[in-house]
Image (cartoon, rainbow, N blue to C red):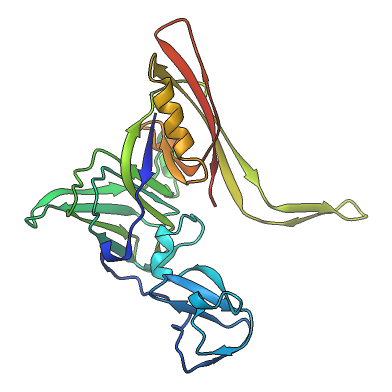
Length: 300
């Protein structure tokens, strides 16, 4: 059982990308007469703002009564802590950054693509890691009949740990999809991997559906499809004497989205999530281990 503690990518760590600052709205400028509900972006803030009232030469960040934050600008959506908001580009997209602190884990969510390439260069510009991770999901293929009727499907997330990312190293992630489609990336998390314990059977996986359903006077069902969030329950063993460390780690991540995973080999069973730890509890046992169980509320 592990977690990746995000370190947060800073603007000066982003070296290059093919995603524009914003692909929908114009940058705020001092001479434009803005009307209510106009939307702009401010590159220095990495944010979009919506006008709450008409104004001219009123910088959004300095005038919260006139401007309301409206989410991250396109380029920065993969770092805003919201999986549902994404950056996209025809065929492929990439981000190259240079973390200022030691990291060894990368997780990507809300992906649309066939593969993700991760490249790492050391301070001497030598390639120390270059792997392409396929996203195609073949878990439903059991026999030749499945193969005959198979329509390719792709995993929407990827997590890789034990990466050699030292301060000053350059990291490039490239998501590629077939011609005629758009590559997509909702969240890119880079950070330090921490081992919590040894995963065990007993985890639970469910989801909350925010769709609206209502029956009219004839009994017909009216459905308005909404979003959803995954809920995971993790259960793992802790070495005796390690209980306080584990609890303090989970407490430190309250109200802070974190990547949780049972094991990198569990790619096809949905055990990786990006969310908030809820109600962690440790049960002491008479043997050499204690049992920890906690929920994770997936962020949308």
